[in-house]
Image (tube, rainbow, N blue to C red; front, side):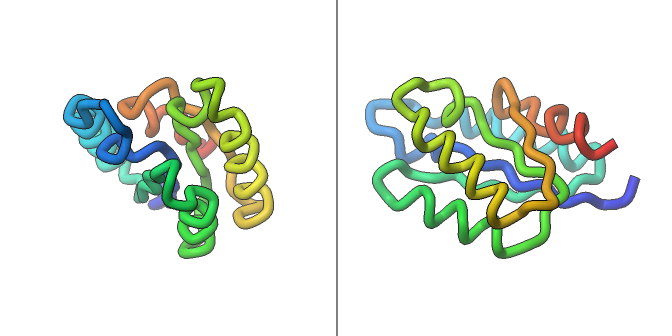
Length: 119
């Protein structure tokens, strides 16, 4: 498989109040290792809700060309973040129109989500 470039958009676990980020950071590292195992270049755009997440997503989307953008469950599954999820999907459509959009169930299966669209 040719090296594909994937962007993973998610919440920065280190910037969530009252949350132990270590288990999520460890899962992110395992998720990155899965990308590496498949020869996929993965970049992570981990956003903080109080630090212009939309701007961070746009900056990441316009930095490179991506074959796929994975939007994480932290943004997608948490009902109070529905508006951010909608914005993220539409930002991908606007700024990376050729990229497939995929959804993971957790940090460790980001590569699996991307692989569904990279095959």
